[in-house]
Image (cartoon, rainbow, N blue to C red; front, side, top):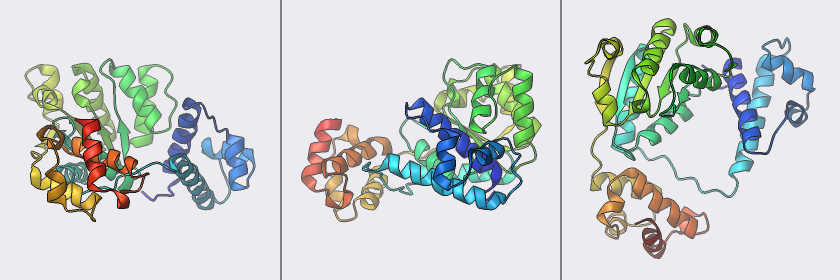
Length: 306
């Protein structure tokens, strides 16, 4: 799907407005309208899928507006660059397989091993990606509500109504649903995802820790149904010093990666998440400028992390 696909822009606008409200800085439809030089009626019609004007032109305006507002919110924040460590590349390859083949896959990872990096990068490169991260308390109904919210649909009502909205919105598309922390879901919630897969035909990637792998062995009749649909399961590779050096070298190219890693306590280099924390803190200590990070900043950041 195009970055300016009306369905995707509509979803993005709904998420943007909801996030702004939840943060305590509500942005109303009238504010959006003024921001792009159109009337509130246009925004209302667009959200209702009833806009009869230049739809592509409107989508471009809305996309530019949302990106501008998000950039303002990030102003002054330090953003680490994406680094193509092996763990992230394996995760992205799994997502590509699931989306291209409309299949269900499982990505198994120790916490902090690059799963989130892969998810964030894939979602950035593929704006049609749908991401949900259910809580451990979520049952079937809550999972469907999460999914409705993620695709910009009404998340109120009975399970049957929620399921119909999801099938209508996702059925027959080439989209990918990524379920983060899928290990937290019980058998019935996982069965709901299996039903979504069967009814829509979209790709689904279940991401979680080792307990997800245990759940997918199909030792019960309930789990056998979903286990048979997961055609590919992949553990992310072990994180070693070579991966850490690659991560450091790409993030701080002006420093010697081996020398920087030599400062690390073994615990601080055991995962990309730990290394990322150190690099992030060193950047903050350098006034949000990674290019100005020194060995002294690294040493101070390590004292804060370990």
